[in-house]
Amino acid sequence: MGPIDIVVENGRITQIVSVGFPGLPIDPERRPPQGDFEVDCHGKWVTPGFIDSHVHIGHFLHASNGEQAPVEYVYKLWLAHGITTVRDMWSANGLGWTLQQKAASEANEITAPRIMAYAGFPSNDEFLNIIHTPEEGRTWLRGIAERGADGVKFYGASPAIFKAALEESKALGLRTGCHHPQMALSRLNALTTASWGLTSTEHFYGVPEAMFERTSIQPYPANYDFMDEYLRYNSSSQNFIHAAEPGSTKWNETLDRFLELDHTFVPTLAILEANRDLMRARRADWHDKYTHKNLWDFFEPQRQNHGSYWFQWSTRNEVEWKEHFRRWSAFVYDYMKKGGRVCPASDAGFLYQIDGFCFIRDLEWFQEAGFHPLEIIRAATMRASELMGLADEIGTVEVGKCADLLVHQENPLGDLKFLYGTGALRLNDATGRSEWRRGLQYTIRNGVVYDTAELLADVREIVAQSWAGANIDTLLGQDNV
Ligand SMILES: [Zn+2]
Image (cartoon, rainbow, N blue to C red; front, side, top):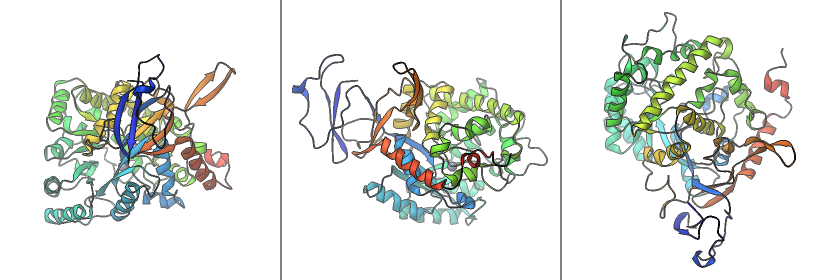
C-alpha cells in the first residue's frame, strides 16, 4: 500500500502513516515531522528484510584450499541481497566466535546481519564425536544454553541420544534443526524426529524415507560409501523415486502428520542446483566478479572436499536430479498450500554457490515450485521469523518492530531477478543496448541504512584481490585444456 511514510527511531518502527493516494501529490499536512535522515522512497517499494534460514558464516572446510575469504565477504554479500537476519546452522568457527559476532552485530560494531547462533550437536559427526550417552547430550545442551546459543543443529544421532536431546532442548528453550544423514536413516526419519519435537528439517534427507512404500531402507548399491561423495550424491537423487508418488494417499497423510506437528521445512533447493545443471551453476553470471578464489578452488572437482564430486558427474546424474527436484519441490509446495511453514535458505559456500546470490536463487526455486511471489516474500520474512522465535521482533513492517526494511527501485513481485547483486539483464530501448538493472537500493537493519551499491563494490574489491596474479583461464579451468 502507498504512499506511506515509515518513521524509525532508535532502530524501531514508531509510525506508519498514510500520506495520500496513488497518482496524486503527497499531502504535506499528513506527513510526520521531518527526521534527522530521510530515505526518499518516491516511486519505490519497501518490504521487510529477508531472513536466510540456513547459512554458514565461513566454514573451516574451506581452509583446505588456501586462505579463506574474510568474514566481511559473506556479511556484505548478505546485506547486499537484502538479508538482515541469518541462522548459522553449526557455528563452524566455534560457538564462542559466533556469539561474539552476534553481539558485535547487535551493537552495530560490525557491518553484518542479525545472527542466530545454532551450535552443532557433536554426535554422529565425521569431525567431532564426543557425545555417546543421552546424559552426555543433556549436559552438553545445558552448557550451550547457558552460553547463549539460540538453538542446535543436529546431524543425526542414535535414537536414544536424539530423543533425549530434543526433550532437553525443548526444556531449555533451544530451537532445533536437523540434516538427517544417511547413516541415521535406518533407525529414524524426519517424521520420527518431528514427532520427538524437532523444529525443522534441513534439506530433504529423511523426508522421502518417511514415505517409503516398497522398501524401508533406501536400496543403496552394494558399493555405497557415504564418504565417497560421488556415490553419496549419485544415490541421494533416488530417495524420492522409492517413496510414495506425489498426490498419493501416503504423500498427503505424511504432509498432514508434519502439519499437525507444526514442523518447518528448509528445503535448500538452490544449493543443490549444480546436481541438476552443472554448467549453469559453474558458469553463473556473478562468478567472475563475486566469487572469491578460495571458494572457486574449493568448488572445482576433487575427492576430498565437501560438494566437489564433479569428477564423474554425468547426464544420467543430472536427469535423475531433475526428477528429484520435481518431487521435492512438489512436496514443499503442497505443504505450503496446506498451511505449512517452508522457509528459503542458501547454505552457500559449496557446489558453486556463493552467499547472497544463492539465497535469491532459492527464492526463484520457490516460484518454480509454484509459490506466488507474495507467498515467497512471506516465506522469506514472516514465516522465517516464526521459525526462529523472532515473530515479535522482525518479519513484518509493523509499529514496534525492528526497522529491518528493504528499499527496492524495481518491484520484486514483478521479477525476483532484480534482487540479484548483478541485477537482471534488460534492453534499454532508449539506447538500443542491454544493461544490468538492479532492484535493491538500500538494506536497512535496526534502522542502519546500507547502500547496496557500496556493499557490492567492497565485495568486488575483496574478490579482485583474491584473484591478483591469476587470470580468467584459471577461473574457468581452461588453462590445462
Ligand atoms: Zn549447511
